[in-house]
Image (cartoon, rainbow, N blue to C red):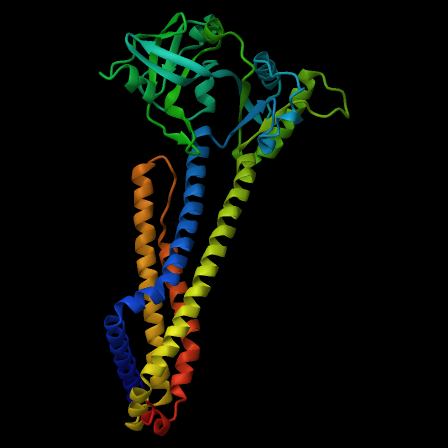
Length: 421
């Protein structure tokens, strides 16, 4: 038993040495042979990196807006882009928040905690002396807004209930606005110019990043609802943010909130809802087709590349068998077994694919690092599981493509092989 194991180890080591020698002796041919595998591994690795990055960025973004918050809006996130479905619906009004809160107070067993009105505009700019930031996201809301949103303050405070009720001209700004208008770092206590109004900064949010790599939380300015309407008037971009007691009971909370909204809107039984209640699950349903599209495209490109690469490796291995027919005959005449010859060519094929896989992984990792440097807000994630999967696919491709030539080499007759010219 020990003798057989020792012989197997010797044969494997010898086959590895021969494979390394052949690859070194034919570097260009080996590289061109492995090119299909390289492209396939780059494709599957980048596909996995993109999907992992989307998942990572999605979860990070959802944690910013909170898992325990639902949103009453005119439309539905599940039908984003299909504006004609709700264009004739009546607008959402900020007064709904007070009515919902009044009903919540009278129902101790409610799944809802608090409703917060939000009116916003993206057509805003902020100025301080000779500095100006365009296209900021300005929002009017109540003092309860922090209950429905994440984000700590790096300086100052949020506006109070008294300031909210009075509609005082105060605001809390994002990190990008603070650093852009106040590069010295002292923003609180100073006033920014919004249209023809001065608004005093009372707080600055810590840097939060972007939602799904698109909307920046650091480019927002939040003020009391009364102050917002004085500056920008009433806008149709109204949302009622509703905090729920348990994020695991979102369906029950949505059902209760739907009943409250139908009551507030005075909708008779049988009439369809003329509002949307949105939560994070709608984003997931929108994201799945994107991920599936990436996966299908990646699998198709990977499959085609690996198929072409496997055919190329098989062809080159057959050529190698022909070129080394006399060598095979000599080794068999000296006592080499069929399994030894089979192992030699199989290991050579696997090694070419493995080298191709390593080059493909290095290329994919370089692309990932480049994307992270050029687009720091774009979510990418290069996981160890992708490395393992890529190496296993490379080995499997080498075995499949090298098996037929290896079997052909192992079956050569020594006498015929030695006479081969």
